Length: 623
Ligand code: PLP
Image 1 (cartoon, rainbow, N blue to C red):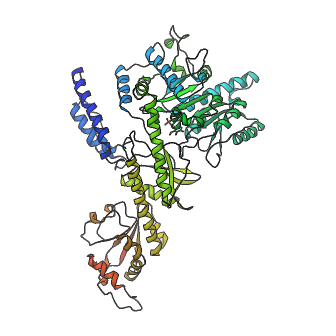
Image 2 (cartoon, rainbow, N blue to C red; image 1 turned 180 degrees about the vertical axis):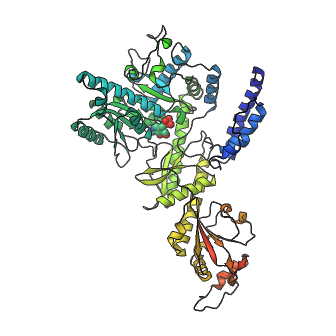
Image 3 (tube, protein in one colour; image 1 turned 90 degrees about the vertical axis):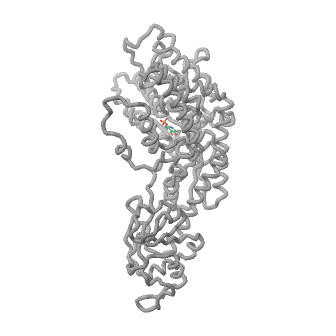
């Protein structure tokens, strides 16, 4: 591709992206593909000769897009938002165009200097203490961009480990590092992100996972007690990770209480605000950061909730020398004459090579302004409150978290309702109408509804709630059917795959009894569908809770919405009027038989039925 073609394809690509973003709502939010779908569509070997651009782009729409989950879709409510704004996309384009690798100041001075300046901007916007910034006089703090929050937590834990080993070594110069390491213990709450556990695992240190309080907030007293117990056992507390906005339910650890305790114990306090930390740019949320003055480091991800594309995880430290002492290696080929006067970000993280990520954040902050970014955050919080109100109005549901930011955790009420909520979530996700993920809150399966789309609207929230309630109603009515049918539960609930099948032989009279018993709810829902042997399955509407279809129909083609379907052939004794009751053949219900026969069953003598229970896959408990 030469420059001339690049101009043309570049313009086409911008058009493609703009068109994609404008019309993403018309696509299915999650792909309807099975693992390995792409292997059948793409050759197993790379082309030897280069291919033309139009051929490549044609494959994007036909092969790639069908397997894409559309994170920018208005119906995407999973995980957390994935920042994606036009200024940010342009910033990344420019960074890719420049193609500089700014690992040191000398490797590309603008990369380093812009990063330092923009991190100071954002640090001030968030309200970090001035010793976290680079420019205040005599400051030894500063900010840096990492690829992810996980990386931020890891490098801080490594720095804390190096610092504590250094302190211990000064006290016990003849004790092996490995022995000292075995004494170190870190702390976090049960609600902390799994990246803390991973960091401790990588660093080979102990991690004590503490119980939060009833509001899922880690409290000072809990930390203090754990530290005391561990010290009594000869362990050395060295690192505490507190979370502002936990992944499951956006709860906030009590930094004001934890801060002084962590500091007094001589630990490195890291504050992980991957998602909610971004909201600290709004003055009304800053109270949640009280206690930050005791922290050694803080991170938030503008690539989550500040309209900036992945990757952009921002991290600040109070003492850059304590950070870098764990990470500095200085071969001759990377040294330069300005080392003393400049920052070399290669010492602040794990990779050497670094993209020019500051550009996109700089574009975003300048183009939206602080006010524009505050409005964006506030709008998401407002919409989450609207959703919360809708959940609270429906007494079948309960809200399971304190809704402060853009996330609402909710579930169908009932202590033993985990399976029902799992089913509700998988039915909704499989429909492709919405995408949400679950979490465990207080040990219960909850559904997380996160406001994610950049310009989410009230109508999106209303739509989502309509879908959720529609599926909940269907599910709850199917439960009534199940209950009233009196069929053995193991038959109804048996499943070993997404759609489980169980052979269930019933006498025709039993079937009629069953039909009669479940008659009321079905009648209420107007939901009996009956299709003869040749009947089209497509005509089984999505709302049916109970469908009766011919034996020859394929199970796979039954829509995913059915909660309960019986497949089989109905004996021809289902004729109007039924049969006379005898000892072997109890009385049939003529009225129901009449209704069924009017719906054109294909009648034969067979009375074997297959019960099919829709049991979509479980989601994993946490994103
Ligand atoms: N910390 C918290 C509180 C998170 O919510 C997440 C992800 O959602 C992470 C850390 C991990 O983020 P990353 O994917 O940037 O490593």
